Length: 114
Image 1: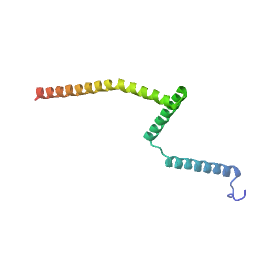
Image 2 (image 1 turned 135 degrees about the vertical axis):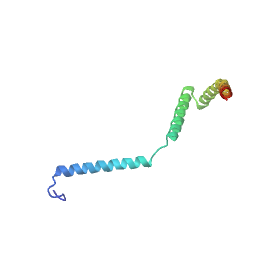
Image 3 (image 1 turned 180 degrees about the vertical axis):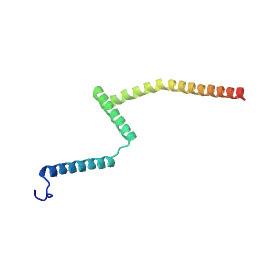
Image 4 (image 1 turned 90 degrees about the vertical axis):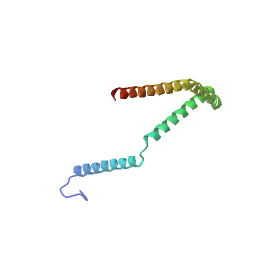
């Protein structure tokens, strides 16, 4: 073997070269992955915005124009806001009532034991 070690056969040299190549490849992958680390919240926001874009493009295709697609989105958002407002107000009122009841119960227990 030219340039090899004495007593080393070609198969061993080839195996070492493949192992070295694989190790270098994996090292490069780790380095690149560390360099391009992505933040999960940023990726979630990017994915959500891409999904909204696809939905708007789909609505534009179905309705024939972006103007009509915008009207559909606006009316859907308006309906959702109208339905969500009373539900949110009721949930806030229930939460306030529950906190008040818990505080009164804790006061009553404290007065009874003290």
